Every structure is written in C-alpha cells, then in structure tokens.
Image (tube, rainbow, N blue to C red; front, side, top):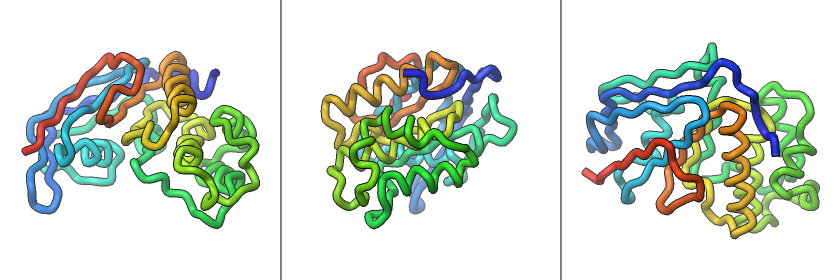
Length: 206
C-alpha cells in the first residue's frame, strides 16, 4: 500500500525546551525531542498532561509559552503537515464522496478520491451521508485525508479511536507505508498503536 511520498527533502521535526499552558495552567515545561524521515513518534501520558496541546502547538494552532518548534522538508511548514484531531470533523449531511471532493479542492490536489476510498475501505459507503456511518467508519473517513493529499509530517491525535481490529490494521499499514516513503508520523495515544516507536515522548500531568 503506497499511500504517500516519496519525500526526497527528508522531513524532520525538532522541539526544543518547549513550554505550553492552557487556561492559565502550565501543562509542561522544558520538553525537547527530535525526529526525522521514517520515524514514528509516540506521545504518551495521562489525561490532562498536554498530548493534544502538543500536537496543536506543532500544527501551529497554539502559541508556546517558551521554546521552539522547527521543521524541515517543506517550504511552508503548514503545507507540510497533516493534523487529524481526536474529533473527526465531518459534516453529517455531506456524503463520504463529497468530503473527499471538498478536501481535494482544499488541499489543491487533483483526483485520488477513489484511491483514498479504496485504501480506507469506504468505497461501498461513498454515496452515504456521514451521519449514517458507524463511529469506526467516520474515523476512517477522517483518516482518508492522509491518503488524499501526501504531506511529509502526520500529526495524529488518538488515531485508532473507535476503530475495530480491521480498521487498526488499515491505520498501521498507512503509517508503515508513509514511513517507508520517507514520511514522519507522530501520534498521541493512550495505548500501544502497533508500530514500535522510534521516538518516545512521555508527558506527565502537572
């Protein structure tokens, strides 16, 4: 399953002495780690430790209190990232196929919708509105954007949420293919996703 890349510019991510706060409360301080092409970074920690906030800061949605986040592999960092949050962010009235057409236009890619449907096992649901999908199918739809528009760095917040065993296998295969093509994947998880992490980040609740 070749779903992305190859990425010849060797994407990398470096976090140095990062400090984040939410709602006036410091989540963590002095966090540093680095990852490069082919790495799988696993972020673990209890609820409230700042896993989601870390991904949002890397994606550019939060401003750090201190520290730095640096990328290589894309002229414009925002265009080199895919962020899939723990919520699926799909519209109930829109069909599966309509979501993919919208994302294709948003990401500036031509075609690829059928391939994304096949990769995520959603071809039979293409004409159904998202509101009738199971939670697992809706999660697969959210993940389809990873296939639709290749980007070197994936930021995944609890990507296996609501997925059954078959869905987890699909997700693991997507990550493996992405890494094999020189991509970098970072996932915030509560339990082992499957791939052995090459970089482990442990956050502790303040």
